[in-house]
Structure formats: structure tokens, C-alpha cells
Picture (cartoon, rainbow, N blue to C red):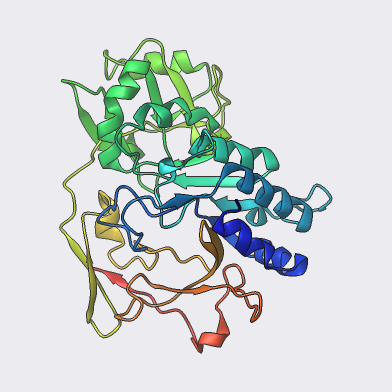
Length: 346
């Protein structure tokens, strides 16, 4: 029996599917989320309702490659932005479990097709080792400071130090038990010119408890590959714990200072909270384009958060009979929106 998504996709013509794939920015693997984080601005339904089957995902990935130039070996100047794709939106990626496949199988599938895939996960309870054991398979990963603290024992047990590039501010945490020194990583950046082990010997002068056998993942430099040697141009960023007090509970206000909604303790901003109090990209996504979910195909247009659009989005199901799509990262003029206004986190 065909799933709802399969039925929806077969209603579109080949040309319509091509247009959908050209403007696709996200594939939502599940409908609903098991975690419901306070800071989430996309209003995901509580609990996982259904998932995109792995065979259907394989078909979508193959059609994107064959119908569009997003993954093109013929391009004289490849456009990296075309190959970017998210496998989550109003979801928790690690909730995905379909046909004996988990999220990382889906991630690997898209990577092997040539896509640049990013993932953001709150890492549900029970999925810690699944996440950690797949670090080397991920091109880009984001883990909040709260979860980094929670995951530290797992990293310790496996003897892993993880290097993350998060926003523009870094904090170093040496040790994970009794010894817990924290400082801005701007003052803790180590150029590396020899082996990883030689560099770690220098770091052990600051923290003798640093594991003797350590795997080195550097997201920024080479996409998380396992290495024993580091090039001279590389920079070593230490995975960190909680760098400070969590910010107070916040709220989103519109241009007229009317409160739109509350949000919880989203992230541990650290310096970011002081330097970027009115960041127009947080906590809502500003992606425009098309996303595919287990229920069908949807247009997403980012707008100013308001009482009518509390998530900062207009969401419209794509209809083959009255076909129109939001161009990837372009305003959809049919809504008579002259511009997308910034909002404020206070």
C-alpha cells in the first residue's frame, strides 16, 4: 500500500516535481517530534506520527539528482549552495526509524548522492551512543551546551575529544570530572603543525587527566574525518561544556513591541546573548522554499512573527492543480509581502 507521500508525489507531473526539487531546502523525515524543546520556533506536533519510508527517500534522492542540476559533475563552477539540504525541520532527526533504518542511514544516503547535509539534534534519551558512534559520518553537526554537558560521560568512556565550530564564539573545557576549567576559546586556540598526539601532549600540561588515546574530529576543517596527522593550517577547537549561566526565559516581540510568544531557555548564548540581543535569525529559521514531509509537499515563506504567524512562517501545501512554489530563499510575492521584517529576542 502506498504511503500518503507517495500518493502526493505521483499527482505531480515530471516538470512539477523538477521544480519542487529545484527549490527543496528540507526533507522532514518524520511528522511530529518526541522532545518538544522550549526554544523551538516551528511548532512541531507532539509525538512522532509517521515517517518517510527509506525506499521513498531513496526515490526522492535519485530523482533530485537526475531531474535537476543540484548535484552536477558537468558544472564548470559548482554551486555549493545548490547541494545543501536539511533532513529535518519541525522534527527531531534521531526520531527517525523506518524499514530498519535510522537517521544516519538517511544522512549517509544523501551524502553518497553528493549532497551537503546538515543536522541539528537535541539527542533524545537512549540515542546518545547512536549519535556519538556516527560522528565521523556527519558533515555538519550542532549540539547545544546543555547536551554537550549531558554527553560528556559518553565521550569520556570512548576516549573522544570533539571539536566544534559554533557561531563565532568558542569556549574550552579541560577535563570532565573534578577538574573543570572554562575560558573563552579565543585565548585557547592552538595552531597544530605536528601529530594530534604531540598537540595533546601540550594540552595535558593544562589538564593531566586528558585521555591518552584520543580521536580527533575537526568539523571545520575536513568534515569530521578521523585523523592522526593535522595540517599546519589547521586550528584546534576544543569541545566545551556550559560556559556560563543560562539566559533568562525570553519572548519574541514584533515591530510594535507586542509580545508574540514566549520561548524557553533556548541556548546558552554566553557572549552571543550580550553582543547579539536582536539577532534576526534566532530562534526561527529564515529559509524560504519547499519542504517535503510524510504528508506531502509544502511551501515555506519566512515572515515577521506575529499573532497570525507565531512561528514566523507562512506554510502552504503545494497543489498540482494550482501549482506554485516558493523559490528557494526568495520571497513569495503572491502574499503581498514587501519585505521580511526582523524580529527581536528580548
